[in-house]
Length: 387
Ligand code: B12
Ligand code: SF4
Ligand code: SF4
Image (cartoon, rainbow, N blue to C red; front, side, top):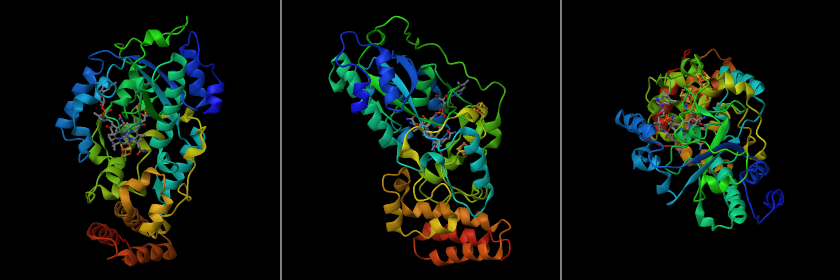
């Protein structure tokens, strides 16, 4: 925090957005722009959200169906909010091209367990919310406003972050439904700092421009459809249209019960989240490595194998995932996901040693961890092409 404060002068007679930009840089955050909030800003997106919910595409993410109107109305989160500052936080472990090659190799090895790259290190909610809190403090000091004039939102607040970020005009919503930028592709988390400061107050100096809120974002996907084609479970029903119920990210993280049998073989060795619709995106060739150390892989999660992760006891699971988003799914869902990966490994040509290790691991767990895990273990053993 001290280095952030020292990079700007506080308090300031005539604070301006460029000082905020300095603070963003010192905090390792990408400036994704500023949106002037006004009534009806997200009306078109709200309509589409209702359509999505009507179609049942949220599956059992009950929080998405709860008060949808609120998601399009930032003033419900911060009464009197006038402006939204949108930030990004990069989480890529390596530069774009190297990351893509490493992931492709891991996906092709049936023994490997592929955990989505965003979840291998510290929980981003904590990292990003902490940094937005520091940014709010800097701004409160600069403009001499109470901290209650700011509210940091990261993911879990009921707010349509991608839609809002697209309004800020430095990025666009891609056909994979994620926010992309020319500089960093989509390999960024999004955060929003709502403030009661107006755009006019923030843009005190000449040469700074507010984005008019009603301009619709021009995308740079062009005729590309790579993400739609690459999705292993065909979760996209069209460009910008995702049926979450088929998405591996939903199935492995959000969904509590059994995973539909027809989808299991399509999941391969993806055991927590999925990066395919981002890995293939041409814009992610330009994605840069994360600047913060927080997202570095823990406990070898960037090179783990299914059998070893499947052997973790519940205590080991809780200890090793302390401070990670993965802990929230709990040990049973973790084993469910890994059992599917192990079943898919048994469908592949494996050496005798590897095949035996997979079978033994599954049999050993059978009966230890509840009915749901057992059902997935039974399915996995039934996939053995050499049984
Ligand atoms: C629910 C949710 C999920 C669900 C549903 C995803 C979804 N696309 O809806 C599931 C569990 C599947 C999921 C998965 C992932 N998620 Co998620 N998720 C969210 C959450 C909480 C809400 C998203 C939402 O509002 N969905 C509702 C539907 C209706 O929104 P939508 O799909 O964007 O629909 C819009 C488009 O269809 C658009 N539209 C329709 N037609 C047209 C036509 C045109 C021309 C245009 C421009 C638009 C358009 O209108 C709709 C309304 O705006 C946000 C955080 C937040 N608070 O916003 C994070 C968030 C979107 N997720 C994030 C991430 C990182 C992921 C994963 C990559 C994680 C992973 N590696 O496994 C995957 C990616 C899957 C994917 N391709 O979306 C990040 C994305 C960052 C970024 N760069 O955009 C967010 C923003 C969290 C964060 N704070 O960083 N997620
Ligand atoms: S995250 Fe994976 S499963 Fe989900 S839409 Fe993207 S490619 Fe498909
Ligand atoms: S893969 Fe192509 S269509 Fe999909 S988001 Fe990237 S540029 Fe857009």
